[in-house]
Image 1 (cartoon, helix red, strand yellow):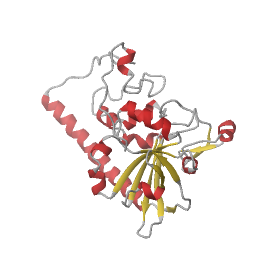
Image 2 (cartoon, rainbow, N blue to C red; image 1 turned 30 degrees about the vertical axis):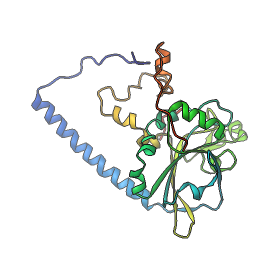
Image 3 (cartoon, rainbow, N blue to C red; image 1 turned 180 degrees about the horizontal axis):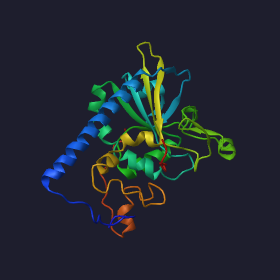
Image 4 (cartoon, one colour; image 1 turned 90 degrees about the vertical axis):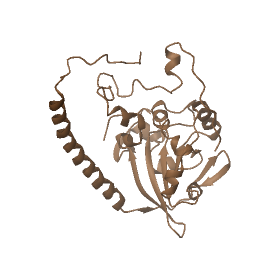
Length: 269
């Protein structure tokens, strides 16, 4: 049985095929409206003004030091996932790990992003010495580097300093007054590198803004039970690291394929 199961669906309307088809076509019109609105928002996102990245950020990677410019790997666009993994943590955030389970296709089949002049990387404050064993445990292949030696996480508002947590003066999801359950939060940021090597920050999104990056949620949204979280005390109460589900039921885990080296998500808008 799944954890935190809400049970079976009961007393749901069942109709003839003709009535079902009529209802489905009516919903299709709403879906088309939504698709057009999403296209409009995506266009507005592309039209946002940019801000120049003036700092030279240097990251720790399994292969040594790399700058933000290096992370582009010769392409013009860079997508960063801000993975919640603080330096003192023993493992990465279960909710960010839930998202990251869908990221590995970007490593296995990175050609699709690369054909669109785009590179993906995950960044955390945890040191590489903690990231790499956890990455191996999870069976992931995507590139993941450490920002523990620079201000990147603070400058892009996904980490809070101790004084900000104490005073509840942190800035997250474009709002002030964040205290945070922990020092790090989740998000995604996008950067563009011009022909002369200058780098620009074009977009960042946080909290519910990263929903579209979660493959499992997008599939669940197609099903009758959906995400099935309304009855829970908090939305992702059910989420575990993927190697813990069977362990909770007393079943052995099957080891995932070996890798090659090379958050709690809260309901808000």
